[in-house]
Amino acid sequence: MGMDVAPRLDIDVLLDDPQTRIVVCCGSGGVGKTTTAAALGVRAAERGRKAVVLTIDPARRLAQSMGIDALDNIPRRVEGIGDGNGGELHAMMLDMKRTFDEFVEAHADPERARAILANPFYQSLSAGFAGTQEYMAMEKLGQLRARDEWDLIIVDTPPSRSALDFLDAPKRLGSFLDGKFIKVLMAPAKVGGKAGMKFLNVGVSMMTGTVSKVLGGQLMRDVQTFAAAMDTMFGGFRTRAEATYRLLQAPGTAFLVVAAPERDALREAAYFVERLAADQMPLAGLVLNRVHGSGAEQLSAERALAAAEILSLTGDPADPADPDDVPANAAERSDPAKNDAGAENLADGGFVDPPSGNAQARNPSAADPDVSPTSADTSAERLAAGLLRLHAERMQVLGREQRTHDRFTALHPEVPVAQVAALPGDVHDLTGLRAIGDRLAVPVERTKRAG
Image 1 (cartoon, rainbow, N blue to C red):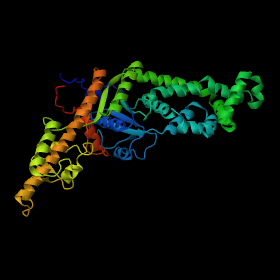
Image 2 (cartoon, helix red, strand yellow):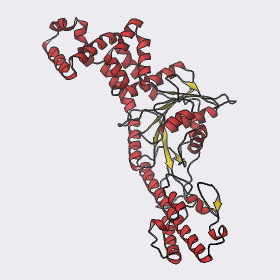
Image 3 (cartoon, one colour):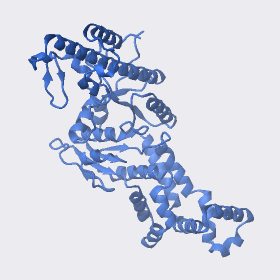
Image 4 (cartoon, rainbow, N blue to C red):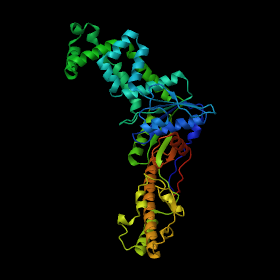
């Protein structure tokens, strides 16, 4: 039985379509969402789009590569991208508190805005209240779209413990700020503080008294003062949250679920896909990052280990399982996540020594005339056995990744997939982002194995 193959997600078709106005990258933490968003922005701009990337928490080197290490809440032009073809790339990092402040300043008169911004409860709320980052990411998306300065907005969603918090949080925060609870807290301030409590019914008095004990008297007064100052703005939060939600559902928006070829990440990805469908959000497909490949897939792990065993028995009587029998150069590259070139070197006439980058002959006696032919043969056999074991490890990783991917495809055969071949190191410059973009557009070569 042949393995299932998911439809391929054509990233360039998505980016080139002028109807695509918003691309939202979502997924669990640590799967490369921010890098994917940045790479999409670079590729889109270099294909003629006027794009802006809204990042949430980029690694410092990635931020520096885009020239945004010193940026605030304002999109800035990334130099050297899209020149000559009409494309542009702007980038920004979300400043959660600044976005909240801008909202207040835009919807309150100057005196009221100053009172709100100085309020201790507001300062706590804007700096880290649950859901604030997600709300403000969506608020900033709405602002960027309303300005209509870019024909493509790419959004890196906040890292969340719960899938799609960025969809839920605006509703939750909007309901909180526009809900009955906050209005009850606000009531005493509206009718004259403590003196006005006699106008409230006994139930409300008991509730506010209990809340005051839980929160503390000073915090309760700060909340009430905040609520009174925000009174005219409450409706704005819910209205804007609902408008952004509709924007995400509208034609022209495309969601990309980003994952790694690991069980937990793809389980989360499956939940994202199901949740987006339930909320009628337009899913473009899955981006599967850090997929490993090999140029020698025709040599299975089992055959490679068997050959290594034979070489060890005929060449060196030492225990073939002893890690000391693996040449240092091969041992350093035994982790496929650290270096993607290891197994591919089996197809070459030599191996590459990472420090020098020089290809060396498999027979060390050619480089050292003092090495006897017998010891040279033994060393070559040990080296070959070590490389075969390295290749076997790589093939086992490939098999595990493929089985995990196949399980996702069996659950969601309709979801197009773009596989991104793993890079040897971290992305820290525009060249690396371009390489990610190239890998997004070109599928990882896989040998179709019989199941």
